[in-house]
Image 1 (cartoon, rainbow, N blue to C red):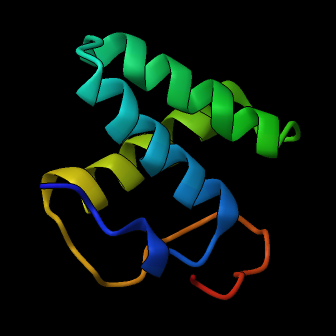
Image 2: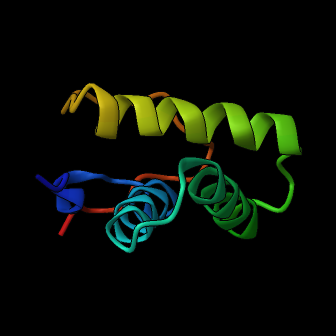
Length: 84
């Protein structure tokens, strides 16, 4: 069952979770998925250090994918956008 990313307000967060789901569906292993998602986050936020990006991406994956929570997440400093 896929996470409904339309309710995720931040573009970077939505992009990370969408990428995670699509790479997982393609059969990629978790480490490659995590690396790709971290890289994607850093494309959105080049000012973020690698450790910062890894921490935030891991929190988002845990929140949306593992726990399937719909509560708001701790996020980056970019302004929320209107969910689709």
